[in-house]
Amino acid sequence: MLRVRTDRLRRLDEVLGGGDTFRVYLGEYQATKSLLRTCSFTEESRRCLLSLLAEQSQQAGWAAFDGGEISQAASLYEESKGLALEAGDMDLLGNGLCFLAYQTLDRADAVHMATASCATINSATPSAVQALLHERMAWACALANQAEQSERALDAARTALDSAQDGEPQPDWAAWVDGTELDIMTGRCWAELRRPLRAVPVLKQALDAYSDHNARDKALYMSWLSDAYLMAGEVEEAARVAGRALDLASGVASVRPRMRLAPVLEQLGPHQSLGAVQEALGRAVRT
Image (cartoon, rainbow, N blue to C red; front, top):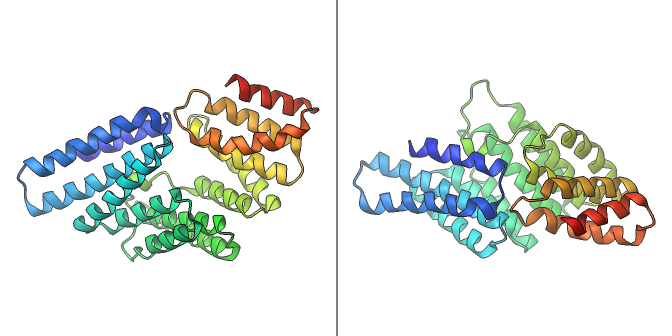
């Protein structure tokens, strides 16, 4: 029942930002932690509860990160690592490591942690988890300007998804990883590596198929498409995409879309003679 409740509450992250969900997820984490302190159970039940607590700690950490509480997120991720180890849950240990890699500002440390997360993969690791860890490895390498390593990790993620068996059980926390998400990560990596001719087509195609229901994530991902258009000299397209991203991010309690869009909007500033740029900058002021 606790696991079903945790999976159901995770769906809130599809439509709400961390500023709205953090207290909900933290409350679930604290309630489960209290059960571990005050109840008696079999060893197997205790192991399952530890695994669930590691998962809830990561979800609360993600909401903290999304809401701009970076130190609190790191603390929750670190705790999840210890819980996952105690539970013997290597999948969640790998996820905790890649969460830490995703948020750190030290690019060498990010690659190191992402490498450690991929080292947890074994023959029993579900395909979606493998793909998730490899794509986070690709992202860390892209930020560190390691193009070949990033491409290899993306290929490994694609192989993992392609090798999934029909009916193979996937943990709910990794079930969102699919071909569209991987295409988006591929485009993001190429944008970070300053390769707009590779980034634009894959991002545009994936985002055209991506639902507005996931407004925060779509706004965030569109910031890389806008950035890639700017790199390619397509200022008006960059402005149109940025304006659409601002519309999607409006009212979502997440700091990340606006943080990502800020440098894009700054680069658009010198082109205010263009109507599309004026419109995008006007939306930035209004929202």
